[in-house]
Image (cartoon, rainbow, N blue to C red; front, top):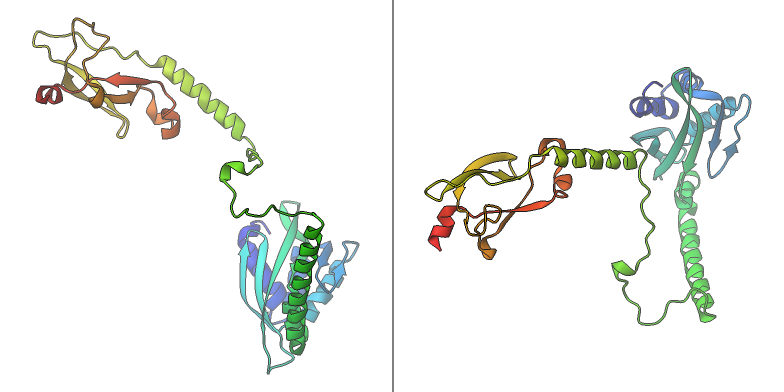
Length: 287
């Protein structure tokens, strides 16, 4: 297989539900390695020389028991299949199995070298011996009750016993293991931090323009939401100097310093230092 995620559907269809034994044998000989292995709740084939012939025999016997697989869904290389047993027409249960395929790459192609099937015990009983399915389910329920009784009995002696009155746990009290960074994530973050620092150094300092006779001045006001600049008039108090712009505390508008915002995301842009912008003259005139 050159693209396993795409071709795996057709491979499983030919190996499991082919209408001809010749197609099934050709598919297994083509897509399985010569030393392929198979693990199942009822049988196991260890990987070894010419073990593919044993795998083929298992596949052939499966078509005798389950005559069709009519619903196959593949997630990556984990395959879910639904089967019918065929030797008892009066009772045809639907069996859901999960299979995991291990691939090996050789000469640029992917081959199946190991298959593992996961089936619930009651599903296996429904496939092989349907009349005994209720017995198996009762055994599973009884085993669950025995496990619960065993745990309660151990708690009498103080083994793994929770104190009385505990009904919930705060999230901050849970000791969680820190998430392991993905490959290359740390280097990517370091690169973004370096580019952010360089961008801030290259940015021109934010200084107000000179005041004209009317007391109204114009400057470029940054809008982070649209990444554009607009010109709005506002006042500057000559007594406090041009560095301190007139603004009331309740009308303070804090904006980040101008950076090369197109190169960084919003979360990195929020890490930039903040500067206080003046309130437009129209709002001051209303007060």
